[in-house]
Amino acid sequence: MRRHEKAWGWVFVAPITLQILLFCVAPVAIAIVAAFTNWNVIKGTYDFVGIDNFVEFLTDKKFWVASANTLFMLLPIPFYLVLAVLFAIGCHRNTPGSKLFRVLFFLPYISSIVALVVMWKWLFNYEYGLINQTLRAWFGIQGPNWLGDPAWIKFTIVLMIVWKMIGISSIYILAALKNIPGTYYEAARLDGAGPIRSFFSITLPLLTPVLFFLVVIGLIGSLQTFVEVQLFTTDGGRNYSAATITYYVWQKAFVSNEIGLASSVAFFFGLVILAVTLFQFRLSRRWVYEGE
Image (cartoon, rainbow, N blue to C red; front, side, top):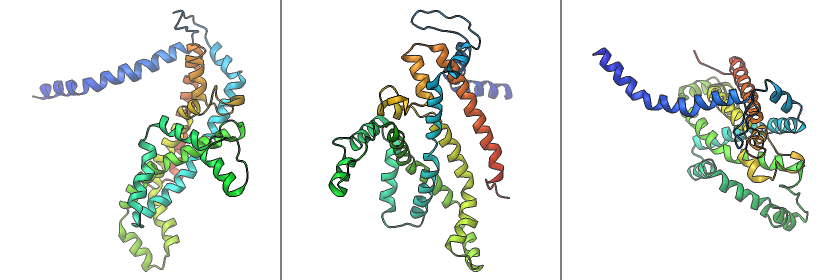
């Protein structure tokens, strides 16, 4: 009977195991091998080049510009987390209109990113966008070239990411708020604690596990920002002002047809993300409240 159950267990896990092997393990293995070759898909040729690909992109000025832009894309994380906490607290206290706003704030996350980018390109268009038209009509000033000026394009992308992530982050935080026992707040009131003291002594510490999860997921997602850059800009923006490392990898692989070089960048970047994530887990011991 035990062997029979074990055999059926393997049958049930076989499809997902095969899927992981085919679409996760195999592509990663191929990419690691390709990182040390000059693989050309069109010509069907590849030669082992050792660390030449790594030397090439590490001495490429565009790579370092893309790296700086990628770090800039981490800027939305604290903003949308703070706004998500405030929004979740408002929903938790059944503020009037909270259910409607909960739906409206969640819509950007589940909507097509392409549709969202197209809408934002219309809003921030230099000549006839709603933002600049409003600035001219209400304040008599000409708004900046949001999508063409290297000094503003990254801020536009950051604003969009903040707007998109508030809803989904607040859902996680709201779920955590509903799991905090009300007896904690009753005891705090009996001890004379006000709303602000209760927030920093009870609410915030008990929210740290979900905040840590959102920080890790947000960090990984922000470091891989790609679609917004591709749709907002042409060739990464003027002076490569908005290009990220993920965009750099895509450009090398599918525009320049340098699969080996793109794989080496992806492999290096994957190790960086892994190291940052492990550092986050180690740092979490100092600020994440795990309970008794």
